[in-house]
Figure 1 (cartoon, rainbow, N blue to C red):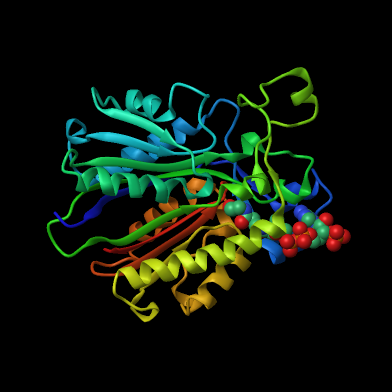
Figure 2 (figure 1 turned 180 degrees about the horizontal axis):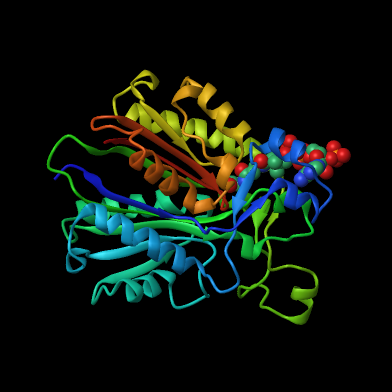
Length: 326
Ligand code: UT7
């Protein structure tokens, strides 16, 4: 077995829409600023009774249905998220219970927006080890639950949603042709959630100071994102033995339309080949890639044999990319 392939995709987005016009009523911003600086027009938000495992469970059900394999043949679950239902148990274990999968491993993986590609890379190597055959790989968030709704620098950027894939051994020429993941922990303080962990446990003070929400140095993160996504993209293109011209569809992390345009230009991929849904869903962090993939698959924008480039960047700082032949 030389590679793994994706045999099922699914995604789930909460129904409730929050538009830029709605945000104009909450913070000092405008639809015009958000649209031109980020490409976002609206995003989906969960209600108070919905947690990330609910979104991930629904996305997983669709992926498993498309994969058309019995639950008993799923050998494990890896969930990439930074907005778990709770600190423990792992959200993947909650999903396992929801799906009715018994006696298989389940764990979460924290890699910011790169969570899905990290999880795919782990699944890739688990399956190649020969110890597992079929794995459920999920990426998703409820970022609006850790958003500071008084900070216009960040609250306009995020949305909620999840996507999932089922991966298995490939017996033909389709599958993951190359992949990479990376991190630069020295830049961790550019994008983080200060409180709620062992460094700064929840207290009256952390709540009063709004420290359980996202803090980001936007323009610094922007620059790192473009550079890292360029080099990650170049690395996997080279490792797959192809050129940019061979890429049929580029699915980049949906963080900012300008990051996506700039990365596509640096990788010499025409904008018509870039999958864009940031206008509707904003940045769903670990959710962006599997949601976009599922939507592209279900709308027949991806055909058998197509070469897909995934490329992502996030808190950590982390990044990752993969070339997949469909
Ligand atoms: O998922 C991976 C991690 N996240 C990212 O990749 C996000 C990366 N960063 C970005 O997307 C962009 O840096 C932002 C969209 C966050 C900000 O765009 P920018 O072009 O870098 O703007 P800026 O932070 O340099 O701010 C420019 C101005 C500032 O005003 P002054 O100081 O020039 O008067 C901000 O206060 O825009 C102001 N501003 C806003 N104005 C209206 C910032 N946010 C808003 C807002 N509405 N929502």
